[in-house]
Length: 336
Image 1 (tube, rainbow, N blue to C red):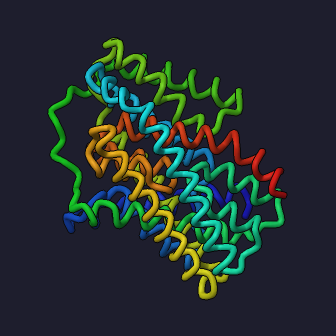
Image 2: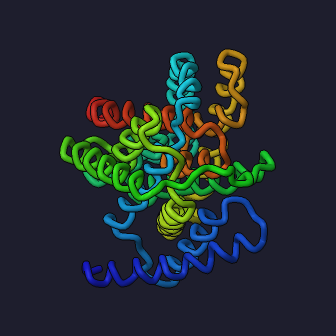
C-alpha cells in the first residue's frame, strides 16, 4: 500500500469510527469511544485495506498522554506509595504469565519456540513486532495471540466487573494558558524521548510532562473530554484492525491456541492480583487492570475512562513496558 493510499484509508477508517462510537454510546454499552471503533476497525479490515498510519496513532497516544498526566494531581501522587510492593508482584505476574503462555503455545499448540516466546510476551507490542520482523517467528500467529488477548481484555473487563464510565466530575477544563503550557511541555518531552529512542515516547513524554505540571499545581483541571475521546477512537480502531489482521492469518487452526493462552495468562495475572490486594490495599479491579497481560495503551485508557486509579495503573504498565523493552531483545538473543 502506498503512502497516499494508507493516508486515504486512515481517513476512511477514522471517519467511519465516529458514527460507530456514537452508535455504541447510544446503546449504553461500556467504553463506546474505544469499543465502537474497535468493532468498526475489525469489520472494515475484513473487506477493505483499512489502516491507521503511525503518525495518526502517535498523535492519539499524545492525546491520551495529556489525559493520563492530568490525572496525577497532588492527591493522586499518594497512590504511588504502593508501587514498590506492587512492582514486585507485577514482575512475578509477568514472568508466570509468560511462562504459562509459552508452554501452551509451544507444547500444546506445537508452535516453534521463537513464535511462542514472542506471542506470550505481554505489552511492549512495538518491540515484539520489531523482533518478530527480525526473526523466523510466524508474524500471523504472534499478532493473533497478541490481538486476541488485547481485544478480549478491552471488551470483557468492564462487562465482567459491571463497570461503566462514571459520571464526569466537575473538573475545570484547561484554559488557554494551561493548554499552551501543557502542549509545549508535552511536545518537548515527547520529542526528547523519541530522540533517545525510548519506547512509547508519544505517550510517556506527554504523560510525564503534564504530570509534573499538575502535581506541582502549575496547571489546573484537565483537557476537554473530546481530547480523550479522540485518543480512544484512534486506539480502538487500530486495535480492531490488528485483531482482524491476526484472525485473517490461519485463524482456524490457531484461534483455539490463542484463546487457551489468553485464559491461562489472564488467570495467572488475576491470581497474583488477588495475592497483592491485601498487601497493597488497592481495589481488586485496579490491580487486575494494572497486571492485565495486554497492550498498555488500551489498559491505561480504560483506567482513565473507568476512573480506576489511572496514576497507579499507568505507572504499573509503563514500568512493565520499559522493563520488557529493555529485556526482551537480550532474552530473545539468548534463546535464539
